[in-house]
Length: 462
Image 1 (cartoon, rainbow, N blue to C red):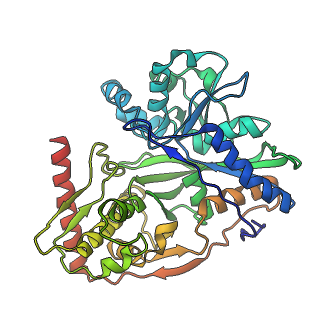
Image 2 (cartoon, rainbow, N blue to C red):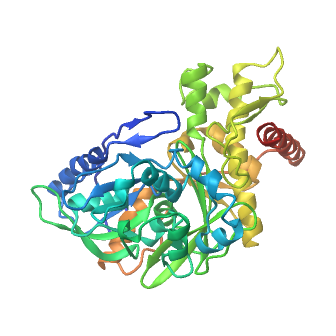
Image 3 (cartoon, rainbow, N blue to C red):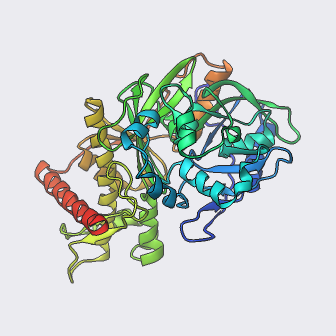
């Protein structure tokens, strides 16, 4: 990207994800490094790169041998559920209010610490002094950079980082039985953070690090308190800029570091939905009720039965309801129900889950919202975008540049390197979707949605 945030070139490479056991989600650790090399090197060969930034999968991590540089585990992905038993055990010991006040998070295997503790229990030898832990960017930098470091936004996703002191928390390390010697140094999100060393090109200054959703918040130009973005992909992740104070949520959301730049720390409220695009893929690949993911918009437009309600909790319910054992459910089927009815109910269910998070943000912040900025592949689904605008009763602004995470960390790097003094946005909407659902219809739909979620909770929790 240039100094204005305009994309001038790009490269991409696939990363294979494997599922070796039920609940296990892994990626090849050296394959991650190879992916960075094979994408970044051609760009560095074609252009004079002033600065690089790296965003990452947030809660995913690797353990490696500091003496040899060899990985001792695969990349254990944020979706991995191996920490579930740890969460059940610690739920009786950890006061949720105490945990939320220190970390802004809830006890869930979504975050790093429960998975890390389970890995250390399975292999106690990994507690040795020569072993290092790092989220994906820390691991890649240990192979390609001058320093294996992380930043405050990524550290705040581990359940080991204190939002008040902005450092690793000794009390949390003790509760999760994690040796401090494993952990990397924590740096600001922007500045001179090290170097990216690629084969055949001179070292590139590394000037930004960020967790992916925080990078997307920056890339969407949400630099002022009260601004909200939603990134849609396999899941959907909603973040609100809340300014320079880490306020705990009272409505089922997370509090996280958004970024730290120029000596100032910005915080965000965070709500994650675990199945968005994945629910549409399920309609296509598992059920075959739509001919393609792209066709779901047109299929949904042909629905006629308003009684069908789908809660697409195919990977549990995240914020703000937090029913991790939940699974998807469909209500209101009849002999006359069609593929179009199920497709529409699924797309509306995705929109309603996002609406739940945004409604909680309104309550926590006490601020009126004037619109929602969205990015990611599913924003091409016109029915979904209209459904989202309708249930929110707000304009939905679809980003012109879909890769908001890359845009955000690139512009952080521009600021961190001094190429620009501040990036004020330069954000543009490709289109704006206005609400058009009648008020009475919206009220009826949201009432049915609440009753469906109440039934789902009873089914799974008793």
